[in-house]
Length: 313
Image 1 (cartoon, helix red, strand yellow):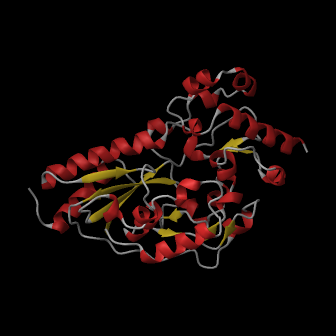
Image 2: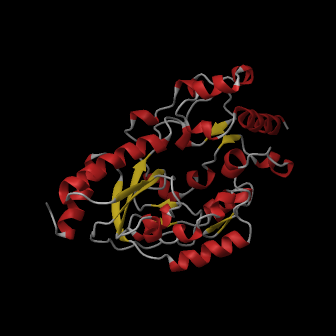
């Protein structure tokens, strides 16, 4: 069994690359003091909208050692989802976010992380680990930044130099002591394309009012989209990629090689009339293992209605 943290860290990153991860980095588990102050202020302003779960487990979000006893390291990974082509919905004026074309990333990235955990155990023997892919109160972008995988851009997404931002982030929290990486610099400079392009004015530099974000309005908000936003939805019916699409760093994005992220049949033959006729059970079956199941059939229909009326104005 290996005991040298440098050797283990290098071997782990090599295995992550073999498994198909875009990048892998390591940070020392610690209290996120600055981020805790920022999160508290963000919540106090009500920027989370109706995502009340963001207010829960504040101490766990800001200190992984409270999430898992004995935690010493946070391993962060990036997994590319940038598609070769946009998903061709029958109505060209309606759009869904690129991350939602294929199988739900929770399944795909977790399976990859399980394989990486098995490899870690083969190196060091029995160890405590916890896999996180949006499944625990973990500030994934912060840990990826600390692990040197990129910087948090003005649109509040993680940007990796030379790779862009169309990737998922996952973590392995572990009690294994690993060699931490150095954070990278911020390369946003004077650019504000993401801020200027947002049709709902959800962005300020390095801060988002989630209650105005199109992704929030079409997914997280369980109610119907407020009328004040109807003319600003730009055809999005599930998520939104505007702030990433205009980011100059995404000119470096390359198509993913993950078969499970190819557009599912239900989207390639998407029909508003069929969706209207489906029962809730049929909807769940048709979009099984798809990110679209994050919202109910009725919510998706409402989103489509808003987009259609907007496009007819």
